[in-house]
Length: 103
Image 1 (tube, helix red, strand yellow):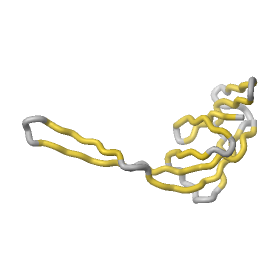
Image 2 (cartoon, helix red, strand yellow; image 1 turned 180 degrees about the vertical axis):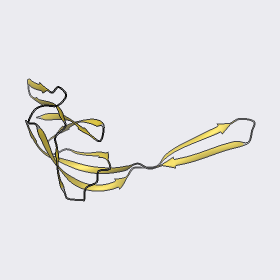
Image 3 (cartoon, helix red, strand yellow; image 1 turned 90 degrees about the vertical axis):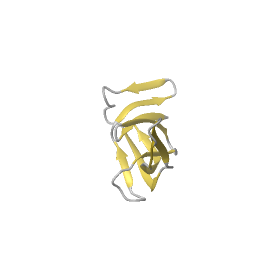
Image 4 (tube, rainbow, N blue to C red; image 1 turned 45 degrees about the horizontal axis):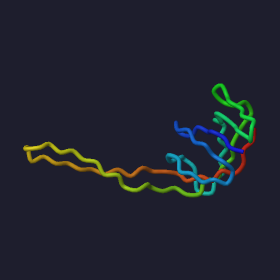
């Protein structure tokens, strides 16, 4: 069984027991989450599609840890002007583990 959920403006296809990284959530490590924005549920040949969400469906998850992603480097260069600028960015994330899918 799988589901398509919406977390912090992004859509993810999840299955039971899967871990994934989502943008940082304001929860503590080890806390339980109930994700109610379920857009679609699939189980073999049957598929339920919501308009926009599936009625009565939810996904339970547990926060595993918080962290920061790897550094992304970006820069700007203007030729013949002796101008160079680089900067970096590290995105905060929350790693969650999907428990069960009800729907």
